[in-house]
Length: 292
Picture 1 (cartoon, helix red, strand yellow):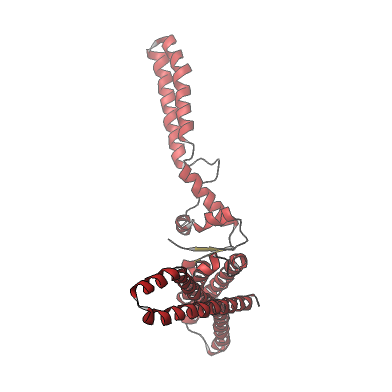
Picture 2 (tube, one colour):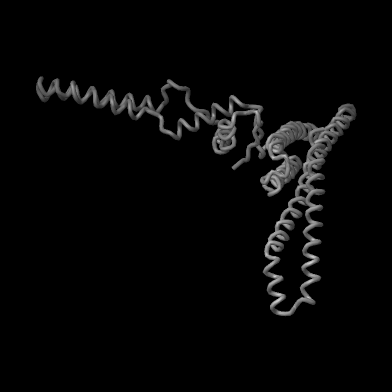
C-alpha cells in the first residue's frame, strides 16, 4: 500500500486519515467516487420497484381475496413494516461512510500530501534516504533522553521531510512529462530548447540532494553521539560495580592484574564523557546548518 507524506500544517487527526488512505487512493485512481448524498443509485431503484410491487400485491391480496378486515390489517401493519425495512436497508454502513470521509479529505487537502508511489525511481530513492536519516535521529536515545533539542527536532525534521517530498513530487512529475515529450523525437530547434530544460531538472535534483545530504550528516553526528552515549552508560555500570571487583581481586590476590585494568576503566569513562559532549555539540552544529 502506498505511503503518504503529509504537510505538517495539516491537523493531526486529518493527517493520520490521509496516511491511512492508500486503499481509497487506489480506488479513486481506478475511477471510483462515492455516490452523492441523497442520490438514488441503480440498486436503490431496484429496491423501490421490489418494495412497490410487494405493497401492491399485498394490497390486492388483502382487499380482493382475504376480505376487508384482513386487508385493512395488512395495510395498517404490513406496509409500514415493508417501508421500514426499505429505509433501514438504505442506511450506509460504516465502511461506506469511512471511505466517503477519506475521499473528502483527499479532495480537500489535495496538494498537501505526496504519495510516494507517484515518484519516479530517482526521486523515490532520495526521499527514502531522507526518511532513513530522520528515523535514525528521532529513534536515537540521545534524542529521546533530551541530549539533543528534541522539541526542535520534532518540528524541524517533519518540515524537512515534507519540503523534500513536495519538491521531489514536482520534480518527478515534470521530469516524467519531459521524458515523454523527448521520447517522441525532437527537431533541432526544439532540442536546443529541451536541453537546457533538462539541465534545469538535473540542477533541481542536485539542490534537493544537498538537503538530503545535510540530513544525513546530521544523522551521522547523532549516530556518533549515540555510540558515545551507550558506551558511556556501559562504563558507568561497570564503575558502579567497582567495589565488587576490588573486593574480589583482594580476596583472590590478583592485584597485579586488576589494578591497571581498573585504572584504565576510569580513564575510559572520562574519555567517553568528553567524546559524548563533543559529539552532541557536533550534532547541534549540524542541526543549525539545516535551518540555514
